[in-house]
Length: 306
Image 1 (tube, one colour):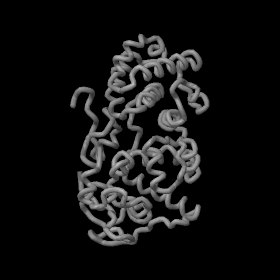
Image 2 (cartoon, one colour):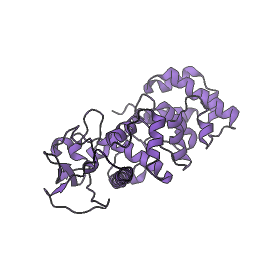
Image 3 (cartoon, helix red, strand yellow):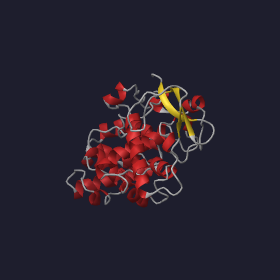
Image 4 (cartoon, helix red, strand yellow):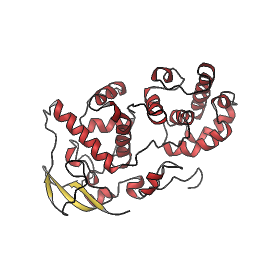
């Protein structure tokens, strides 16, 4: 992977030092890629304690613009070919990784390609397929139950409305918005654990309830931005802004982050914390979009391949 400049916080408050030893691209003040001399210091614009609503909106939208340049290939990290597959995969992703779901669903969809097939399935056979996902008995009940509901109440089709999706067994607002945004092109905010962690670190909201977080963050952005915003935030949380040890020294939005310094600030050490394509490792999808591969991303290995 080519080495491109990144802003990293220098030791001592108030300044950011630009280095050229990170795998993460640097963005300039307008969200555009701008060349900066190695070692050049620029003021760190840490949000004021009394940040106004207008300033918060501007900072939040700038963060999203800059993340869009860092992750122009961001996409849902679940493999799917149709709304039914995405719905099932999202339900299965609870308490496990998207990678493990992606390694498991090929066998599931090969044997049960439609809601009607899965609704009529032998639970013990489904449990055996889903065993690698964890909580396989509960997940078997969920996917068979929602498949029956799709068959009986929606003619075997996944509904494209929030109010209908949340009536399905095992489907909450988070799952519904994943499906609506990525299978139907209808904007929605996906409040997963990464999203919750980052928006609080960035002081976009201090809410802890997912529904309240969704409302608070949604009010900062045009509705048309919601789906891509979710991808940008979640991807950043998975690759750089980790829960236990964020890679602050390799973060392209460090100048905009009030939580800078919670993690590793040394650029060289921070670079070693990067995950997936930012660290040169395989991603979570076995069949990722071409744009991801063109950017240097690597497909995940199938189940049992290491």
